Length: 102
Image (tube, rainbow, N blue to C red):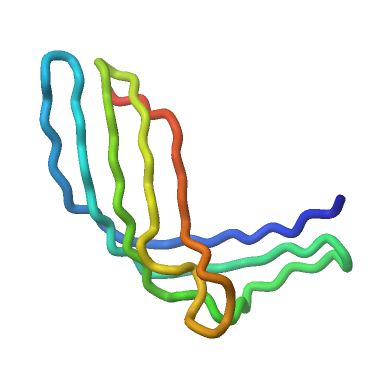
């Protein structure tokens, strides 16, 4: 199965707060971001394009983190749709992963 890939680079900053209860640190943040670069790689036929039309140029994310000592997990959810209205689906970004903090 051939898969197409899309790479998006957003630039922004985050504003949030955290509380620490015993050894557990909980944090919440909001991040406004601006789209700086978008690229797609198509498998069939194989080609690269940097001119992706219809992407939302601004996104707002909400995030949560939970840290215990230096290890933790994070979750980010995009409140704004990835595509402009009437261009694509109502897809929103979601990411989660592990964190190391020293």
